[in-house]
Image (cartoon, rainbow, N blue to C red; front, side):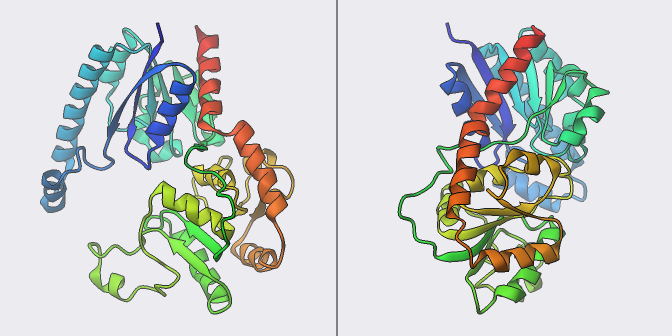
Length: 341
């Protein structure tokens, strides 16, 4: 009989199902239970209540309580051998304790530990805690000695090279902008350098109409800043159509990598990304470009636009396909948890 894995995580660009595919490939029986980020479920009733309530604390607590009851019911009916939690902000310690009565439990953080206090609070109750950021491991070991660095990954079923795809875009950025002022500053500076000379596209909502209609109306150049989110399938196509793909980390990342590091390379595109020790040791020399300042980033992009970087992109693609897929990460999880048995 196959071992069973219950996967719990936020509904964030299909990552739960990439984790599921990895476990399925490794011959597990799986079930996914996912939750909406701010309020679960984020239907029109809860969205309206969240908007009009002076304080939404009661609503969050109600939604959290209902989700935990549902998670326990699903756990009992599915009876998994392992509960694998991708983040876990919505879960309570009482729920984890009930899981632990009959199952192993592991958490893999999507972001830095300090950004997810609800999830880090669960660390003492789980069998293994996997950190997105290498510098978080020592901090987490004070809560759970079975804490490990597990970098993010990519799904080659979603991000892959497309044969004979024409390069229509010179420089591309795709990512969250609304909570990333460092990204916006760099992208605005780069837009000044590239406008009228090169095709530069920026995808990601940074001025939502519902937040400030005036800022939305008078936002920057709409031929560059598209001000919208797009699906992973569209992202892969755009990566394939781009000569250079820019990646800018959140300030939380000191020694780690966001999923885009692996997704860009997985698509076969050439990447320029802010440097840190983990990225430097992960990729062969020159297979990607790195920068340490806004000025160095812009200077490198202007140089790289006149270079053939196709061989380097192929080398980076081979690196991530061999070592940085979700299957590779789940194999590492199983190896570590196997040693604990």
